[in-house]
Image 1 (cartoon, rainbow, N blue to C red):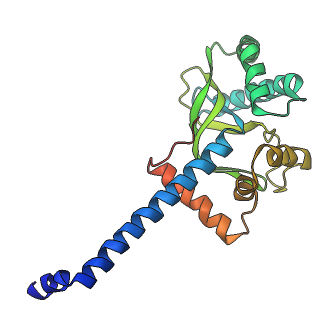
Image 2: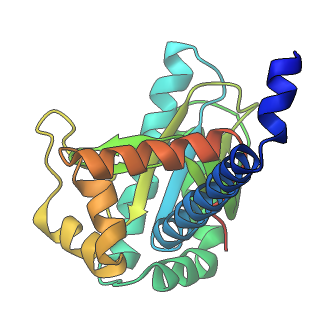
Length: 221
């Protein structure tokens, strides 16, 4: 113990320890700042859809997908020419009653009596991959649809840019959707979500996930 105390009394050792500590703090602040800025940039450029089934029964899960398909079909009708997230959010707000009616009518048509609740807001989403595009976990603006008791499995997608109908098996996002993503993100953000083969981008993606999971950043306006 005395030897350790003597080491700390050495002014050079003290300086090294202090500088190392300050470097650690500086690096941590820079990493968190980077993750915060990139997360905000990505989150502020996409609008997502979250559908929650009444339960995990096969019937309720099938109903969830039918509701989803009808909502997406309507979404494509009114938002097909949108070029930005702000345009999409305005249209969704303006047509929120129609979205609720479509979901409720679909439920009744399928022979169920569940109520449906629709909210437009900022919600937590897990990390998700759509073809060759991956979005880190975080808080995103979206349309949340809760069917009945909303105790079943979730279904998540991106309504803008349109990634909801990406063929996951092919692993490729349509060029039109990818172009919209690229146009709405800066170069660093687009590389982060689209280039999983780049080791640096992969590390940065994991860094953002780590900070999100531990509540150190929130991707929110």
